[in-house]
Image 1 (cartoon, rainbow, N blue to C red):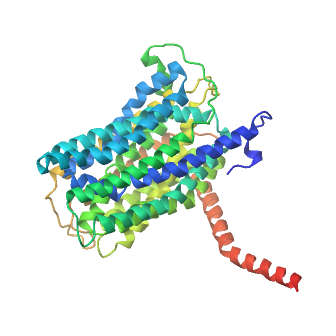
Image 2 (image 1 turned 60 degrees about the horizontal axis):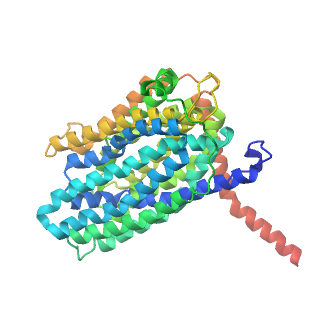
Length: 493
């Protein structure tokens, strides 16, 4: 995963660092299975069987962003105690265990009270989902600040990209198996009743929780570099440094606007696939999880290397501009062209990975314990402010999308332009998302100042050259192997 030359020049602990980096990567191999199993078709079908309305689907999309506001008080606690590892472990263990409650409590309410209690079960489900996402919001800033003190700066882009790639390898079979289970046990010819479908989804959530718990448990042996607690300053002074840093706010503004735009899709893309295109759960998983995972796996390493070598701004420019036609393209996905859904899902995931890698590395620069070149001591407060900006935007986007979908549920319009499909609230959400992505690119990117960054055109050439060379190398590998085997045969003779 990481070569010896990539490790810091600390003769006392290269072995410990290498072991730590492997544990952090291995944890995500299990964590990625958890995340994949609770995403996509199962959660959408679970909510629909609870009779969730369009607005409640929007609320479900907004839930992780809404819960992220907990990161602000969590950051205060982290800075004043310095106990990043303990806060991370407590909050994330609680978050993973909550999936057992999500899997069982709504089902138990319906079984005990009957169909008249479905509305109550839906409300309980949404409340549990909020607290589940709140666990990530509390532990996330602690984890980022902790990792910023562990992972060497010069290899962060490559390391975290490689870590996510390992997670993709475990997520792909998990997504396929979940789709197969949903088709055979919740969408088969003998279509089960509401409770039967909820139980199938609940079993999936419970198994996922086990993988998620293993993910967090692997962090138990990871050491925490000492961080002195910050002085007990007033709350507004703790977040003063991030709010005074113009470049920090511009980066967060760009990603926040993109998140607002993408949250317009959210659960509605899954719902669109299931209800409008009438595709199976397995096909939904293939389109919305497996295709994006494969695409992400193929490009993550290239994004990471581009950020390390070329800079964050050009990566954001390339990825951000590419996401505009991807958002607009969803209006052309229909039963006659399902292949386009695979292309757009894969392209969107590959490009969004570039935005995430660039933004994550930017936040890492501010999150360690050492002072920056400008004399600013970093910390989890930068993570919290970045998360708050992004997640408030995502929350508002999800709620706005849910409100539009609810109000325009029966709306239809046939454009006079021939190639355009009949417009419903789904197509309207996709169009708004594409326009907002373009605005993020136009408004924020020109304001980003990164003196050492290379031009976007040069970065694109660098990436395409690397991708082309890798493809050529992979294509020629069987020929090289055959040649080696032939030489070995001659030597034996």
